[in-house]
Image (cartoon, rainbow, N blue to C red):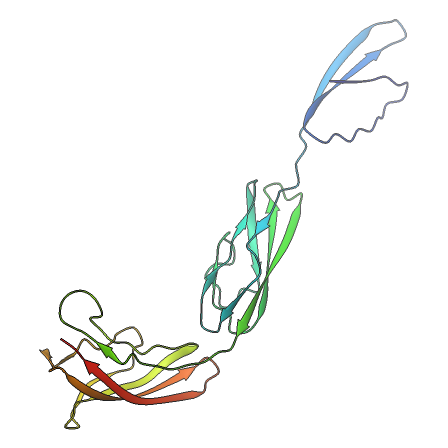
Amino acid sequence: SIFLKDTGTTNFAFPDSSMAFTLQGTDSNACEQTVQVGIQVQQIPSLEVSSDTSLIIGERIRLEARSNELVSYRWTPNTQMDCEDCPSPEVQPLDSTEYCVVISDENGCFEVERCILIAIDKKYSLNVPQSFSPNGDGSNERIFVKGWGLDKLLEWRIYNRWGQQVYESADLDEGWDGSYRGEPQNMDTYAYVVRALNFDGEEMVLEGFITLIR
């Protein structure tokens, strides 16, 4: 407790932590009265965020913000972000972006801001593995179009040695399982044509061959 003795009616105190103040008054007849007042000091909340980093365009990353207090979160900018008011949103920036988070304590007394820079490398590539083995062993069962910065698969067509189309897809996540109309295809070399769009809206084309191994 802190005892304040003064002939005035006003005293100023600036405590660093919560504490109780005791006020003792004495009148002209030497009568005393004591009053205790509790003061709750709201601490400035701490805020730690993940480090600056770089990504290849199209990649996703989860931002991290941590505080030792009960706080609310507000992230900006909120484009390409799955949650703007949570501590760990996932983002997919298409350009280099500085994301900033502001936290507010539950009483609205303080706001603290930190920022994270995500640098984007606009590196584009389109490729297909040379072989795969859909033999039921659980490994390398499907073959996929791969690359950096791919936004959308326009078409992927695969042909056998007689020019018959045995597969077609516009889904990057599907992949060919080595079958045609439910029938496993023979071990052989197959030709393909791939057309895809990158995140800059440019069309990319690739032609090549796949070896099916069983």
